[in-house]
Length: 78
Image 1 (cartoon, rainbow, N blue to C red):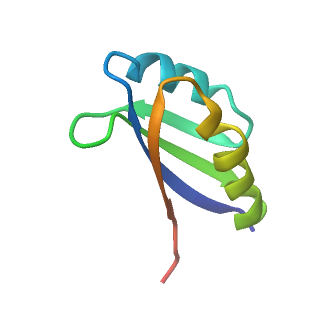
Image 2 (image 1 turned 180 degrees about the vertical axis):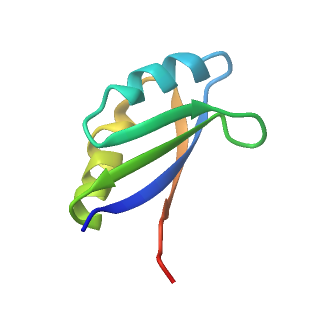
């Protein structure tokens, strides 16, 4: 079973499009969309385990130039 999470990303001013483009190319990222509001990019990440998703966020997404903050929201099936 695949697990999913949404990552809410804040970026430096003027960097949202570049961040979304860079993040979209990371393995495990299913979508990266620019949005309006308090966050600049919303990303959907999938992996075999939540640990794998977390490694993608911490080890790859957070390293993208222009990102100032991330919040990861795990998808739950109630």
